[in-house]
Image 1 (cartoon, one colour):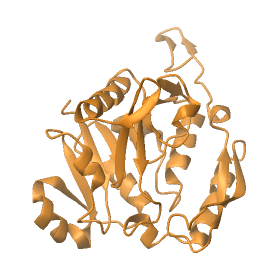
Image 2 (image 1 turned 180 degrees about the horizontal axis):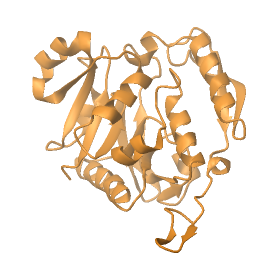
Image 3 (image 1 turned 135 degrees about the vertical axis):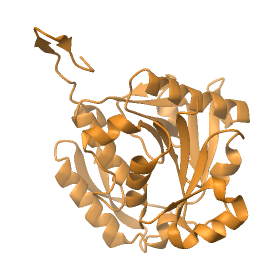
Image 4 (image 1 turned 135 degrees about the horizontal axis):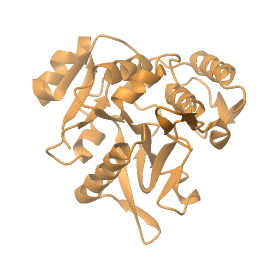
Length: 269
């Protein structure tokens, strides 16, 4: 399992690391910090745990991680997560052993040939009764085969926010299916807590990203207005411009090619 690393992008949350505190000891883990916060994070967590990124913004940082990761398989987790496990059809707090099993499951899927896999969010987890779903939404918690990802030309940094939607849709459109576990789930505190992308995300940035996402993926993305009970993600309005996505429609299976020398080839039928 040394070829799977866990990378946690974090910003201005040196004293609040729920994801890190949830993970079992012994994993290859890196807190990926901005260059100007390297010293303060290193002082608290030790230099070995810190990976300093020269870029600003979560989408640029995620792309940088994929290009500079120490491991073949890259698990990206937000820094403010807790985890649940489904037991007797109910989500309960995940134990350390549950989290080990969850990460091992993602690892096995990557080893089996999936380019991108993920963990379901706690919200909406009950909509899928099976242990996993093929072809669907991934956000905040996902893993990649780094080498395959970089070969596709897909990038995280085309958008400043909603970049994970763009990446997932782009990979599906190229014919790479994803798989999401619903046996496990991640949850977060209130969106917009101090630190993270709430420090720089604005309503205008959110709106522009939603419009551009629909331009990138016109067949599958529709721009809509959504209302939250509280101000969401640090935005200055309770109504935000967002998107509705048809994930199944985005997937375009690769065609099998008949070649007399190489035989029938293709990753997916």
